[in-house]
Amino acid sequence: MKTNIGITEENRSKVAEHLSTILADEYVLYTKTLRAHWNLEGIDFHTKHVFFEEHYNAIKEYIDGVAERIRKIGHYAPGTLKQFLQLTHLSEEIKGDNSSSNYMKVLLADHDTIIVEMRKIIPTIEEDFGDVGTADFLTGLLQEHEEMAWMLRASLS
Image (cartoon, rainbow, N blue to C red; front, side):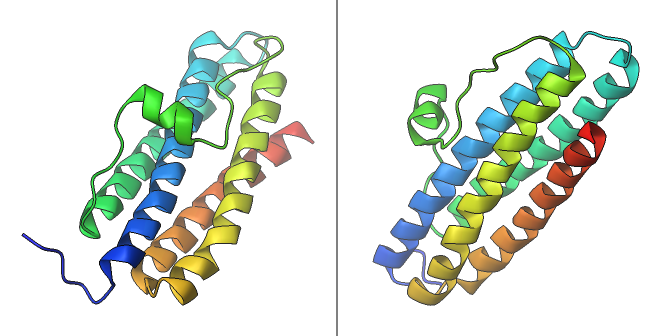
């Protein structure tokens, strides 16, 4: 059935493209956070193991929310690793050792990248494409990434 939510098909398509990139970023970040959780080594293993688990569980919810938002505006979400790697702003690589500080630096940089990218597109989605619902959704998601970045940054201080 046709989606008729007061936003043109052209604009919904453009919003879906932005959301697909965000979905890819979230999926790559999720995978990297899982890697940190699985491969972490060091004296702070237990506390950081739990810390990374909390983060990847939250990111898993973000992934679902973004994919569902794409569906709500009448489009299909990408769902293959190949698509995610083509769409993402992030690198799947993690260089360095398996210490918590190395993982936190890498993940912090990824959160910061996602935050910057969202700040760029939220006004466009709201003002140019007329999708206040998606802009509001992304603003909430942006705030979640700001909190995770703060936690990582504070842990590295």
